[in-house]
Length: 198
Image 1 (cartoon, helix red, strand yellow):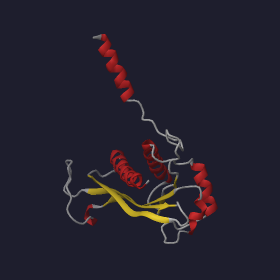
Image 2 (image 1 turned 135 degrees about the horizontal axis):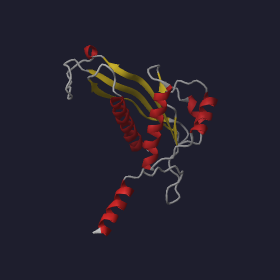
Image 3 (image 1 turned 30 degrees about the vertical axis):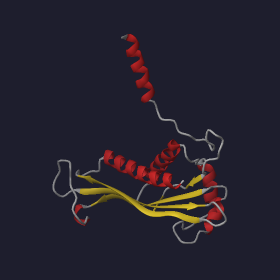
Image 4 (image 1 turned 120 degrees about the vertical axis):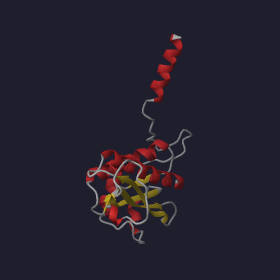
């Protein structure tokens, strides 16, 4: 009986340990993984730098946990950003891609909205599952995502879309747990879309 107990404790300890994140540029067979330049999340003034950093780190972890791509260190991407200078990454002009040679893909994310949407301004019907007043507000994040393939002679846009996640909030003050859940869902949604591309 004691052996089974020890075996159970060992299995539980291994199962609850942090997951392995693959930060190597090559897979187990020595084949190079796609190299992705994941630019820092941008904002249109709707979020704080700390919040953007949280989303950056969560998305980086999501992509690296999959082990299918290699995302170089932030300082090498920062050098490319400095050389490129201010660019409109969401325009049709892809001339800024010349500053990102050596990468297979370039991913740019911009937060369009990050905050509470008052109940009166929300169109359509939605349900409030928690016990709350009839006029629930929504907390939501909207992000523009653009992925560019840098393989070959000419860069081409392989993904350009707006992703949004919303959650009903029923309190006067925003609960940090609601923010975390919405952020996690946004990161999962963007991560899934990007993993399908690479």
